[in-house]
Length: 343
Image 1 (cartoon, rainbow, N blue to C red):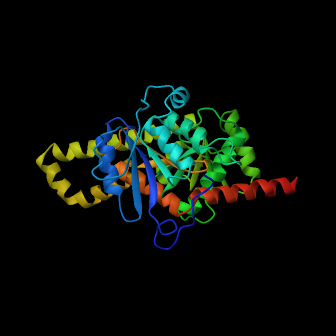
Image 2 (image 1 turned 45 degrees about the vertical axis):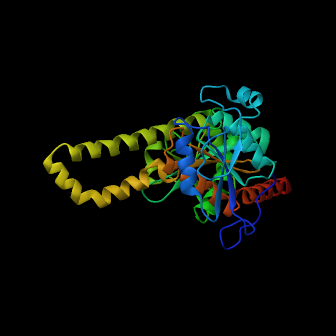
Image 3 (image 1 turned 30 degrees about the horizontal axis):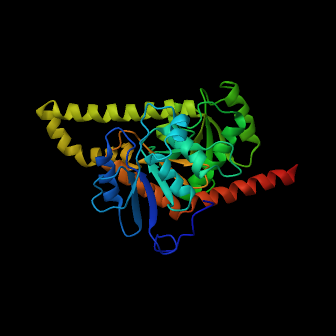
């Protein structure tokens, strides 16, 4: 699938609903929560199509039967090659064949990446796709990538992640001239390992709006519009953020419930607390984009609730409507051509 059709004013694709292929067998909680999330997301403009076993109760949503499922513990590449009739592989193949505009899976992340590479395929200008997560920072959202697709990376990969993240921030977050920051152990240019030192040099020489290094302690304060790193560092950082946010919110709730005074105070701060929880809750965004493929893929958390699945499907549909894949391809192609002309 080379790209999705242009988006008309009514939020559909050429007047038709956005078809989102949903891996009903991905995730930790079984298909019921995924079906519930798909039902919640279904609308006139968004049509979830479930990929799962025969007899799955979809409550009226379209079902494409899949006789196999890829488990979380399986080796990604081997599972994708062996289980060609799995719900994940069929859903990704639907995007590659143009039968769906996007795919959503809460299953094995490595398998989603492998299935995406095999069946949706990379954009010609992309060396490695990257997982882009929207971070709900205090002063506005920012994009963290790579958040887990590439445990090892080279400096030129980080430059490309930054290019994709900058395009994503402009198109999806509507940020003009996004500022790119490099995640490191200090703000000074000479701080970091060999990878960050080499990446810093490439980013400084690029035409991106590069603001230098940033430390992880600033991420929830909006360290930059785009924060770039290798996938190992990004995934560790993301899981630390998720765990910290969850622990703090649970601690506040427990303190409120622990005494009469706490309950009274809780009533007073309830509106502010609810707003904070909605802003920081990972379910709000639902998933992360796998950028760099010829079609749109969204990876949801394995423990996603129905609300998170619904939001992941909506996130996928918004990416289609904003033509993220096409604009990535156009901008990256332009960057490659400009670089070639300058040599």
